[in-house]
Image (cartoon, rainbow, N blue to C red; front, top):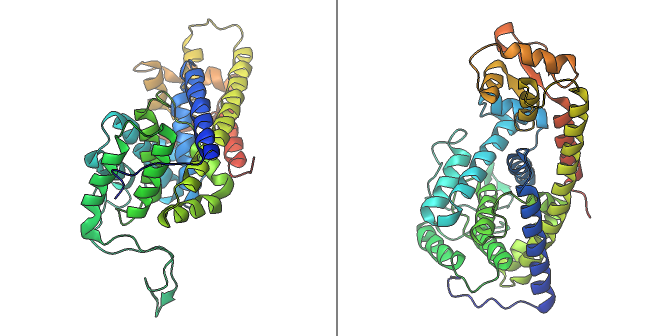
Length: 357
């Protein structure tokens, strides 16, 4: 139980946590004022990195296509589910309770595993352990979470800790995340839900109110260190997980800043390519919408422009100017187009994540 935990950290750990909180606040203020839909881009990028920690990865194009089609299968579909979980987490950040946590998990899993989505586990689970006679065994598992009937009371205790006002925000979010992963309240999806919960806490504490700092990209820089920090927490040492999250946040701020700079470069190139068009032209508005929807269909183009027809005249302008490319191999009524410059920037970001810095 941690509701009344006395949070005492070494001076260097407290200093690192405060440094990361300052960096995240500055990043949030700077990027939150941008005109382009960078908040949504950062949320999706964080969702992709969080999924990658669970060995779920896909190209930016595959993720955008899964969003467009509503696909729920494959890695791209799982990542889109994580986007929904992150969105739910941030929407519920000002009232994080057991119901909010269930809603996050439901948003993550309701398309891929509806039978467990938004429900506490009712069976014993474990992490690791070798198979015996073709079946998993808890006897030599790396970690065995609490028995199922204790989950509701442990979540209530976690929520009580998460709303305390006397614990520094980054330390509180890191400890809450580690406790969540220790409770392991769901049969599947605990890692992604737990990291969404971490973001909800950062928003609730006012550290990142407008954008999602890509912390998971920092965790990917040393996944073993991340797992070791959670293990140390389970052994009673809270310092490693606070240090781990603080370091990941600083790496994430750097990665996120570089992503936004790359997208700004794309925007400037497009402005040059669209020379001669009015600043309020529909083609320019459609180009701006491609940052949020780098793969579009005709209905999506109409939605971006707020029109009921004639979207192809503006799509053709962007095709002629080299901003859009038409995808091949689709039936005429299911044509899609992609903004390769945006997809390249997102893929470059994905390649940077996981690198030590």
